[in-house]
Length: 524
View 1 (cartoon, one colour):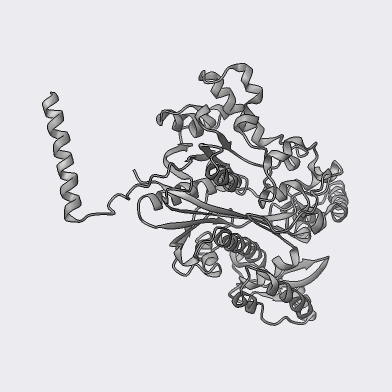
View 2 (cartoon, helix red, strand yellow):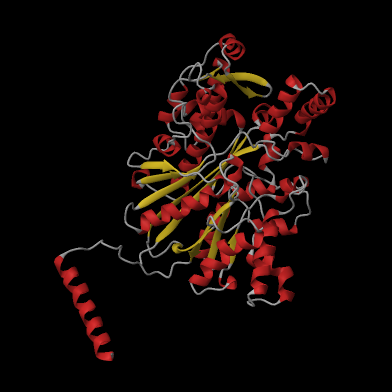
């Protein structure tokens, strides 16, 4: 069987403190209660919370020096977190750099510029002074071409922006507490093209574009060699006739310079990135495409999602970054990690939602079919949420909980002793470090380190596990999940099925089949 390989990944963060306050759903919901609820006590509680938010927002420098953020862009290893006392917000990485091995942490003003750059319908307006200043920064950015910078065009007067926000339902673009631009609605009555929705989609697109640009650059790839793009975020673009019609994939490919690429969107809530890996790996292994880019931008809705719990406990609001990632799946080159799309876990309709059933379907079932044990996988990358975010919110350490369940199944199946259970997470797991941007933590943050470790011969096998809560869409109560095993490359490459169909090859295969048939007949 022919397999595809992972040729490199990228990870980006956009620090957006003003968007926490003005666009994160926890905060906008609080404002809605203040404006509309009849219960004065509720209004007062939400008012006090919103008033406290600004003092709990981090500076760009604080976000850059935060260890989990530095790990996300590849400047540090996740193992370092084991030696840091929580909360990790109390520790600052010395000489932290916004640029990393896998990507970057972009400041808010530059990200607002990217939102304008990727806007093709002139729905984004920037104030002239702000536009001129941020244009200088974008001209100096190593990955933003002159062609992209030119899309900033000219800014407009502040009065025009203020009027659009006040009278035309435009969504403000806030920087340092001031509206430096706005996003106009794309239709007068279509709720799916309201300024708010268009803004959210442009944020997802812009962060996805940055992830794609970094993935191409960091891995020395020719953008013209990408033939297909699978986008796997949690947003949906469309209009009143097809609310989630798409296509983010092509929209991102256009601005990443992937001129030879087609693409489509894959959705599955938090599990979508792992579904996308399976899709991309299968497309390449089948010979349909030579190189596929999997990419996802981030979500403004989840900014400050657990803000109330963080503020209550005197912590900064840690969910202050929009995130993105990208990875390239290509033909087997005898070097890069192999995507074992024949060892895939599936949470089926009949699996149920019991934790043991879920983990069994995603972990032990595919391994059993492949004749492998739980301990034959060197590292499991599950829901890699940062526990600095989730523990204060009462959700505990999500990766650790997953590892405990996998470890318990290993004990049950007899592959480890019960005494080894307390150390299972450290041996076979990874500390969580990814932002809670829904789909972003779901297995894929480890791809960069995984490839690095396999190329260096440190590990032989890993499993990426994605899980999703489909019931959030109110269409089904079902849970979801999928997984895929990735192996160190042995240096052997396989010819793709159907890659050679000349007459000599056909004769060769026919002769081999006849010999095997004759031998089997003789044995009988």
